[in-house]
Length: 176
Image (cartoon, rainbow, N blue to C red; front, side):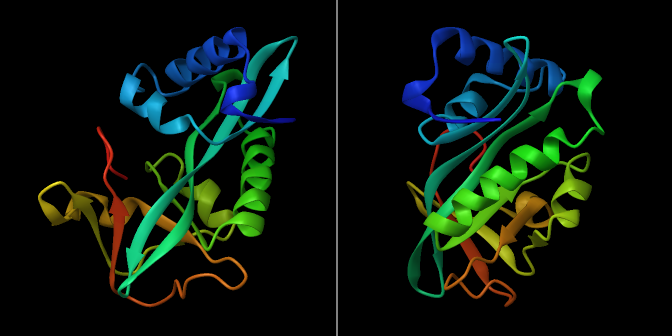
């Protein structure tokens, strides 16, 4: 396992991670998704120089109960299809959670149905309230993301087991 800032990834590593994500997401990982994964910390497992597992944590700002929270947001979690069910996803998530727990007020991610079991098993909690985004036009509900948004409680962080509206910062593409 290697832990690297985006700035420390070589061109070959960036290309290899992107190929892994394209393969793992069956071609449904776009340029905006890739952009969301950059600018933070990457957790990378490679075999013979080829990435086989990856996750990243980027900083975002969330609004909850009238306050701004520094959030470690998990992006681009992927394990090569031929290497799944061998603990690689658990390994990159454990590294991501260490960074979140030590550097952020809360952790969050958005999951597909396929990824849900990994996060639940690791103690991530489905957000019990509603979701929204602070869009250019103002706070806008994101009902389609309510069931896919998971949070992680960190020491001294946000009270995560209360219902309410969790509001993420704006970005192009999928906001969650």
